[in-house]
Length: 294
Image (cartoon, one colour):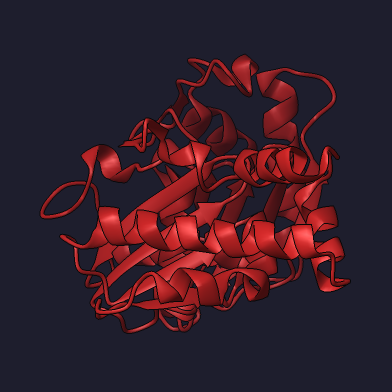
């Protein structure tokens, strides 16, 4: 039986196209080797669990017995019982008890397999070992195809309370005649670039052109930053976070829009920071969730 300091848990992050796994250590939420694989080509729950088991075996190779597994999953998902309620993605998992299925593969009790929301995992990773470490009140936002969000108070995820929208979600909140996701997502950046130039480009490509000095691309990111700052001011003033951490694919281009966002937050006692852990934040956050619960 490993000591508390040397305790370790297997952690996963399930994304839209791939799954990541690693061993997370209790002492400082340090990650071992991170391994990744694409979602299975054969769309079945058995194939999905096969990938989880294979990745877990790779990640845990050469280490002592893991205490169990904590898995960051997108919603809708019954996190307490480990049952997917998603129909728009991974539909083959709908209604499947993944605690039982993965537990059997590892020879564990079903209660050794736990789940948490992926946006919550991202923020917990930054709170435990990243850009929001030691912060009393923090918000995490993942900017990508969608807009993920999570709120934390004293290192714990909260989904209700002062200034926290229902379920801690902001993507679908009404804003300026639409919803928040219309303004601060991949779609928003691409639409704005298309309207200005007539060209369709991926966000990474738009960022490349901005770095190369293209005026239209530069302006698109500056406007994105202004919109982001205004959204943050509007939605988070009541919650009064000390830090807002930006993650997700768009955050890789934060140097192009961060100053514009910060300019819209003048007068608020909040720091806007970019994720320190990047793609590994949900893995570390899954470890934080496991050991906090333990």
